[in-house]
Image (cartoon, rainbow, N blue to C red; front, side, top):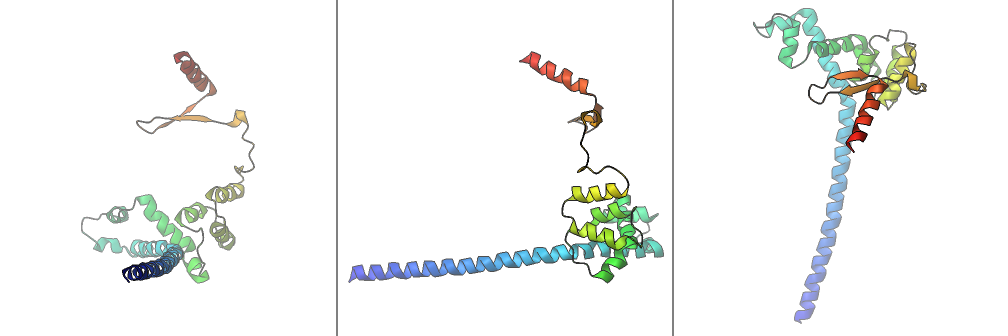
Length: 201
């Protein structure tokens, strides 16, 4: 009788464990799908977030509302610092809003790869006639290097994917590990460096 009871308890535990594992797998599957959906939503709202920043900074700049944020602010640059933005970053948001804001909102573009960095690179190139094409490229080209090559071609420069990188055209640099400064070097520097290493061996 006791053996049967132990066997029954073990079966029940095994059944419960299997059920708990199944419930656990279902919960984990639900969790991962929820997290992935949140990631997708966040990616879509990324454009919205930086557009809101750009729009608000534009309104603040144009109406000089920054004056009412505090008596210690002398200009818009002080206001940018107050928000934790560099001058360049603050103006980039404003310029991106002015060039792309209304267009992106009107078109309701679903974001794939579009972001501040790409739109910032487009500012000198874009006008009303080519805006749609450039925004489409910025949003559909996955690799930044490929996107940069599109910009280089538009500027009449040699894209990296078409350059043969001839030895005589390459430049060599070293970086100081203390101050992080880069210095241009010629090939003889590296030859001397290699010879010095061989002598140590």
